[in-house]
Amino acid sequence: MHARWLPLALIAAASFAAGGALTRSAAALRAHHPSRDERRLARAVETIRRNYVDSIPADTLYEKAADALVKSLHDPYAELMLADAFRRFNFQMSGTRIDLRLPTSPTDGAALPGEAIDMSGARSAVRPGDEVLAVDGRSVRGLTDADAARLFSGDTAAIVTLLVRPRGGGTAIERRVARAAVHVSAVSPGVLLGGATGYVALRSVSQASPEELRREIERLRARGMRSLVIDLRRNPGGLIAQGVQIAELFLDAGDTIAVAHGRGAANKVHVARANQTWPAMPIVLLVNRQTASSAEVITAALQDHDRAVVVGTPTFGKGVIQTTYPLGDGVAVKFTTARWFAPSGRSIQRRPPDSLGTTLAQPVFRSDGGRPLRAGYGITPDVIVRAPRPGAAEIALQQQLQNVRGTYRAVVAAFAADVLERHEVANPEFVITDNMRSEFWEMLQGREIPVSRSVFEAAADQVDRTLADEIVRQGWGEPAELRRRLADDRQVEAATALLRRSRTRAGLLAAAENAGEVTR
Image (cartoon, rainbow, N blue to C red; front, side):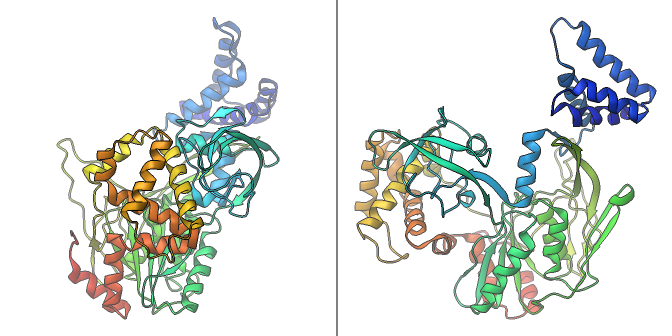
């Protein structure tokens, strides 16, 4: 019975955001012809508003009531999104951010994602290696990445005052920079990893993702690519419709992509509408525990139809679909409306272990070609390849940098810029020398970064990788930096090894069956 209170609460939620909520909620209530339970809720709100020991606006009470109703669903993905949260959600789904137009991400304490920064921005305002100490008078020291992103984002028309410490130290100065709408591509630059094997990372599933991925594949094909690695690691998913469209790129007309079971319109069978463009191209998908949601829809569909070999570690296991319902005035509610199943009929929804902590047995499903597919615990890759765990030295370094990561990144960027200005490296294949590492150590000491010499020396390999990646990124661009970083990636290495041994899709499936688990 209490679920019938939801319409009133949602009407109220739609009205409180823009002011005058009580009056407009009452009007909406009369137009809605409220039930007895809805009238009871309205009387409860009004009684509390009039008589509670502390004054609480009706808008706040209705907001809390609506939020409590959503939480009562015990749905981990349900959310009442008020104006700011709904705006950020829409930007995320569209692949757009409102951010400062900066050439890098020089924050102290929390860095903005590099791909979210418009590289064509005001380079005279902030240069690589500069430190942003404050935004409009608010210090960024100690902020989390999420908090820093919210601080930098905001009104597109706003001019933001930054307190910036120039590269190399010195007196901090104020600089003014405009925010702007920046499109964040969900797809990394495609690169060739030797021979005819291409690599592209799909970082999220947003509105533009299918076309962005198609364009990048076509660009790589024009450069001679004949096999492809698609990196879905750390892809949290996004829009289900766009996930279906991405799967369509690699399947034929009539192939089932996913089956959704819910109520009413939520029941739907997603089917490929046209034949794929690159039917002969062998494909490997890279996944890990952070691969989730619509990224799992893509993975399950291609695995079930034997269209791709999956390499990595088991995925997150999110086999449910959420729908977002706008309520007006910039407010929306999001909750689960369906469970989805892969073409084979399996659910990849991760099931909790039993009371003894053991994993329950699940039925085995089959791919088109008869390969066994596990259900109930995410997507199990065809070839398990585990990423190396951080060593003791790397962990110790990260612990010492915990409260100064932004400053550390700024020093890394400044060091890279100095190396390039002095022309110390001639190509992206350079090696970090002992002298270069010692110079970087002196820069850290000059900025009073609290890292001990013993920890710094023990973590020399990690330090060298960080420095080299930044030098290559600044000097030769993101594709060159990506190629260098991928050369040390165990899971990418396993994927490319499979593709080197396989010229056909059938050969790739056979190679995966014989590979077993890669543990080295």
